[in-house]
Image (cartoon, rainbow, N blue to C red; front, side, top):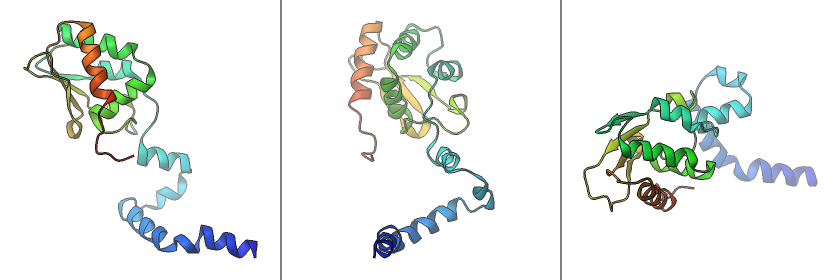
Length: 161
């Protein structure tokens, strides 16, 4: 009885849903090479890496309307490097739509900081499709930290959890 009940719960009751998942997964990832991977490696390919190194992100960031030496950019990196890991991941989620790093690592993430010529009472804006954060020209580290923290702590993304 127990064996039949477990089989029903784990297999037969979800057979239709699993078949749909299986078909969808294999239509995107149809390769015999997947059989060579461990489950952790497949998860890494599908979801990305939970490891985040902000200093690497800083080195590979591209700038539009700002340069590395502009005050707002220096304030940004001072604040972000001092953030705890939780807020750093929220920043990544705010900017890219995911709190995980792509498979190739942080250096393969095309991260951009763009200048937004608006009043400095505006919050930062992001364009997740382009991994871009747009910053007004904040005049102080304190002002940037306050606005950035509000933006990343209250963003919902697509509402998918």
